[in-house]
Length: 386
Image (tube, rainbow, N blue to C red; front, side, top):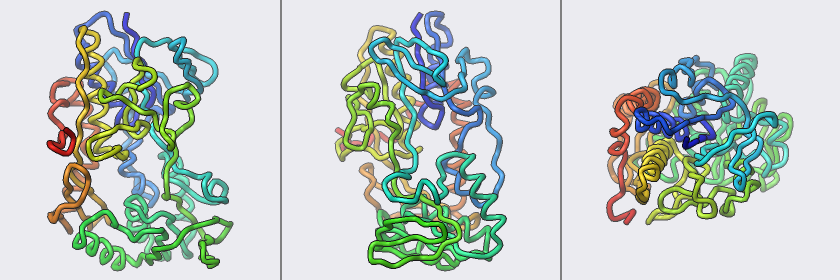
């Protein structure tokens, strides 16, 4: 029996699970287990909607996996013994594996800046987003400081401003929102934020979060009744503690096939992996995470058949950004994620963004029945990844 254990049921981990299930359904020598802290699937692409008070679909992982022979285990991963090939769950149970798929992702970095862990909300989970939604609903009036001017911060600021027009929303960060976009798409983003009443303060470094305020490096203090932290992510220390080789951010370093360079029986996918491509190390997104899950599943099946896995290649396609429920902007990109001239805005962009956000769950369903479709579902990057 080939025991395959998958840690994490986010976009990457769940893609690996259903792809493996589909590709091995006629085999009797494969046992697949997936471990996740919650039964409910977290739509991270929509957590800013949850935070603003909107209700999302209740998507249950065990229901998705019904009939696949994949065992779902609910629990927290508390240790990995790569020498003994075992994982520990909730400090109570242990599971042996022949191959491990590590897909535990990242979380908001709440330790780099003093006060964040104690006084700021995050969008790390549906539970955290729901806590923020309840706090916003109880506020009535006041200021919400969204710290971090990346795309997550911009989406959250726009959503909160639209759903809570009585609140003053300020978006703080070192860079201007949309800095990775082309000038026209970036300009549209700024106009949309201004229309929603979002006050943008860029070029500032946040040095401390206090109860009721945010301090920046020039000595100024910005009053805030609620603080949402979207600036930076950190990787759980499990990979490093287990002895996997990691980079300076804590992400596990992989070979071209997505196996750990120090422990080739461990595949590392999604945000937790430092995956080198021709243009550099990939950054974590759903757009890239799901293809890594497909590739890990395909590679494991090739190994079971006595073949060598092929190198992973991926090129970015787009950067879709929602700006509330009635507006959006989509920047199309080259495979190295640099912006093209082409972008969408307005209603067309809203439709495009909603299509992207709603695609993963039905894609999981299709991969169960037609696993081969996953091999053609992403951009390979051409000359950018050779």
